[in-house]
Image (cartoon, rainbow, N blue to C red; front, side, top):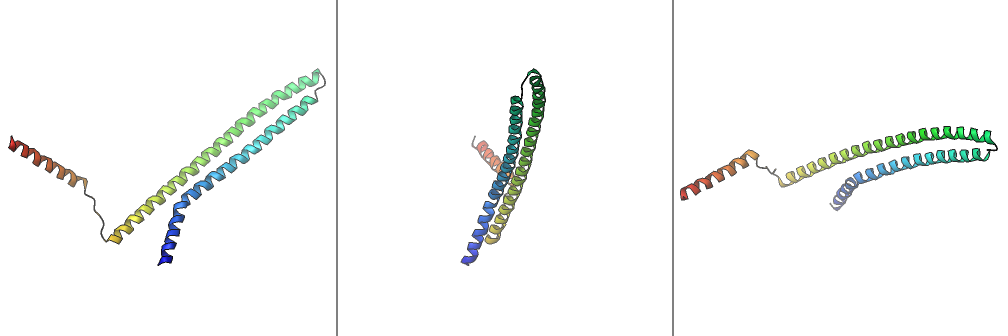
Length: 158
């Protein structure tokens, strides 16, 4: 009997912590993807900067300076495009994370509702009777009848 109670307790504990474990896993995966992407972006940007500095050290005369200026403008255009692409990719990652998070919350909510329903059914079967809630019409009729009776009593007194 104690073994069964311990097994039940362990199973309930697993069920309790499962949504948190899934959430932590989702957050860790998302953080890992975003960090990896940002590290790759930083590597690209630092390589671009290093290339620009090397090109700048090779400037020896006015013609080289003009060519360097032209390449610098092209590089700024390329950098601008790359930054837009990176921002778009990070936005997509965020939307994907949001969708996965909403899915996880929906699943957890459904599991909690099912567990609550199972617990209610177990309680009802353990007590042997299902507790019936009063219907709204019965409650309203009962309160109207009480109000009518007290109103008639007040008229009789006057």
